[in-house]
Length: 436
Ligand SMILES: Nc1ncnc2c1ncn2[C@@H]1O[C@H](COP(=O)(O)OP(=O)(O)O)[C@@H](O)[C@H]1O
Ligand SMILES: [Mg+2]
Image (cartoon, rainbow, N blue to C red; front, top):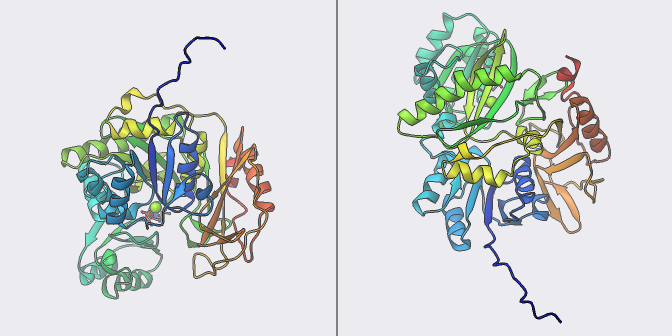
């Protein structure tokens, strides 16, 4: 034996990272964090059957602020990332910060950008950010009188969070009146619909541009597009999202620069001026009207299913980026992207977006890693040796390729091998972009 002293490197403390949420977006976040060369120990609350293989799932609901805070304190979590909007609107970030816990996402005040469409519209108007002309109402009688003078179609939006169901495009005055009554008088969305925005209908193509921001530096993601309607050719009711693709060819480099300059930058500055600086992911839902981007809405977190196509194309270590945002030094981290494309097809339960059955066995899930596809679980649970359905959106199947066409092919090949009773999915994800 040699007498050279064995050099044992000081073990650097393993970082503990908690992801909050249980959908496809959170599975993608956990998957991306698991690639970090820093090998963090991952937790997810509450997670799902897919996330379970990468992270320790803890049975705490995403909106249980007190339990999440207690868990992070006890477990000494070094960084928490919030997936969905509800906990942000409830003040999860504020609660964590009060305890000295590091967390990625906006405060409750900053989250108003998503949790109040009236607040958001007011701020957009004041910051001269291009958006549809709109008026807000807190009395049904005023709203009814207003629509009588307008030409149809017109867009009626509940002020608060309504799980993607609070926007109606009214094609007739009758439809508009009925919507106002449902939202404001019958209160179908409770408090969320008691105040509404009535805005001009914009005709164009939709595009999502998300960006990391630490309140100062803004780093836009590759542009993505989601498919909200349940049926092929954008037919049927709205859903949480039936698929997405990235990069969206509509989002040219010059358009993304324009969006950063005219939309993201003015909003980040407006939030800072208000004394509610924004930190996290700022999501701009855009309508391109003859090449000019108008904001339909801001969200204050990553989109689902856009995240599932954006993160696989992110080259930089996500953990480095998240920490840089939290520590207000995003400027120092170069964020780079892989060439190529990703297409996500959502496999949904029979009946979704209406009522659906749960607990159905999912067949054909690949047991080994595939080179050109990824499967992110959205609504799944484990039952004995089986993975079963546990939500409306069940799986996000992502194909990867050099081109959108290749990625689309990979996604649908993978989808073809997976089944559960009553499963449905759209057959035209990314088709429009590929045809251009
Ligand atoms: N002014 C508008 N003109 C045309 N379509 C709109 C307008 N505002 C919203 N929409 C449509 O309604 C969908 C949902 O509206 P959005 O503002 O994104 O609210 P949410 O995502 O909270 O339901 C959009 O994706 C878009 O298709
Ligand atoms: Mg939206």
